[in-house]
Amino acid sequence: MSFDPNRLHFLRPTLVFSFAAFAATLIGLPASADDRPWAERMFDTTKLDFGVLTRDGVAKRRIKITSLWRDDTHISDVRTTCGCSAAKPQKRTLKSRESTYIEVTMDTHKFTHRKDSNVIVTFDKPLHAEVRIPITAYILPDVTMKPSMAEFGSAEYGNKSERKITVTYNGQYGWALKGVKTDNKHLDVKLSRINKNGRIQYEVVVTLKESAPIGEIRDQVFLITDDRQAQRIPIIVHARVQPDITITPSLAALGRLKPGQKKTINLVIKGKKPIEIEGIDSVDKATKFETKLKGGKQPVHVIPFTMTAPEKPGRFDAEFSVRIAGRRDPITFKAYGHTEAAKPAVSAKETAAAKE
Image (cartoon, one colour):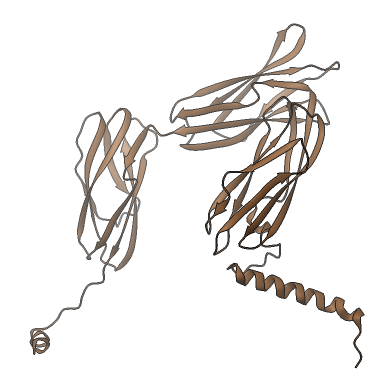
């Protein structure tokens, strides 16, 4: 039978699949129905839309990358295809299952109207690959915000805080804000019209509520306009809610214990102001533990905490909550260890035989 080069198109899918399977095996890729290139699978998004932006504002977004592979992943280069945007990684080398972010910035000072670009991320480990993420934005030429975002910085848990932003329209035609919107239950936003120097201005008050949880908050609130081409304008909200009370250790290693053996550690609980501890509870009611609490308010509590190892051999994990007087939410800590298997009893006859 003669060779027909036109039949090669039947072979190409098999060759491509075989190479993909080989590469997947090489970098330790788990079995998956996802047929995207290995590098693209690490990204939490395949496109980035900034939406509508105001002039001279802060326009930053993040792309999350998580290494899925057995070996280290290394980012060798990050670049953009337009001077209107810039990008940089938080870190370049990722261990297996470790994550990082690519921070992408759109220049709203020099550029206006619609801008399109690409973020190109190049990897040289575990294999060479390049991922291109399209980005787009529309920058309003006649609208400014001062300041350009609601930046709360470090906010203390349980305290309310607010930021004020002035929105100004500098165009020649009519323009108005119809309202504001947020889907974050820990944020409140209000809008009011300002009459100043004959210009169209609004004041936006963004409030971080007392209910905001400990940790970082990255979100947006939206201005609703009467412009059909730009109906929603986002305002970036950023805060780092700091704990008012700390507990050490927050993760206690109890080591290897015999079934039923007790292990005592000292919990150090510090408050920014004097606190009173009402009690300690276990999430799992079967967990056995003892504590010695001292009444009254003080800024630092040192509490002896004793836990009993479970009877079942193997690793154990336990979570506990500490109730604080006058505080809405308890603080938590965890403990873990390993229960050793009990050794079988040996009879006197077997002992004597062993000595012989």
